[in-house]
Length: 439
Image (cartoon, rainbow, N blue to C red; front, side, top):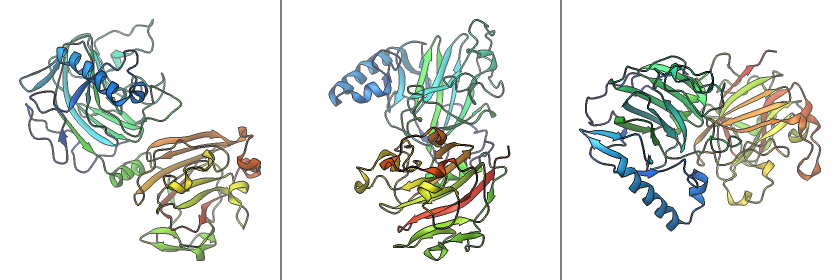
């Protein structure tokens, strides 16, 4: 992702000592003490985020106090710099963060090994890049430099940095990290080292990265110093812009923002409001773009009213057929936070391949905000990314159990239209773009 946020230059001019944060940022370290931080011995037994979450409040507080006491033995403040001696519990922010831009500087010593956890998860790596590659440990590649997502699966995008950007020992290095959903972009000393890579959930690789979590400073193996640690929370409108501008080559708009030129179906039941397609309240029916697609990726934004319900028609044959069973699938668009949907079949929740495969929940934005969704249909496989987080990864050819035991013969379709399956609620869609995937 070579998209630069408009409010901050790529190379932030840091002051020599802790000072006021750049515009829009908040200081995480005040240059004087450990206010806003606590200890977390995250790799000790029972300290994984899921384990800590299960503790009773009093037990959790006691555990954090123990870790913080340990951290204070190894962390100190020297001349406005946060210093760790290479041992002890890590430091964790008291506050949880979701989509952020993080700026910081660090300086370390030979053979040190450190990193930055995002959403409680390891990590943006910091190496001694002078170490020689050891073929007996092929997954450790410190000679490639710092900034990579070291705890991603070996060979995965982002695990190794794109370029060597470390400075010599004794000099301060600067990180700029942009995290939107699972998508991580890292600049080290002004050089792009991770480009819009998916950060894997180290604690449960079958699950997405948590929606929010703490920022941790990891240290072991040698002294490391930190200063000018600043964070900016990214609002949803900006997050959507970042997601749309990444990997954007080849996408073509299929909606002109003015009328239903190029669309067919029950268009009389929809209207265009502020460049968005909106289902009329109390109306419904299917509408679709006239071109047909085989393999494709679609991107769009959608906004739900309270309890709103609609669906994406994927490889839809057209006509008045039932989208959920006759198209490749109806991808559910639903305010599944509404209490009236509490007892739905899991295959009916937002982002699910309706009636076939459930999506991961908890990644919808609050009602009234625009969500950004990316859907890729390739052969019989379907991947769905919501607000930067992959919530569905399925092969529909392998589905043999269906909601209400109702077969979905359309799941095997190889071509069809892209559209919407209205369900009487004023759900809004905008920025609808599709990129064909050539075989």
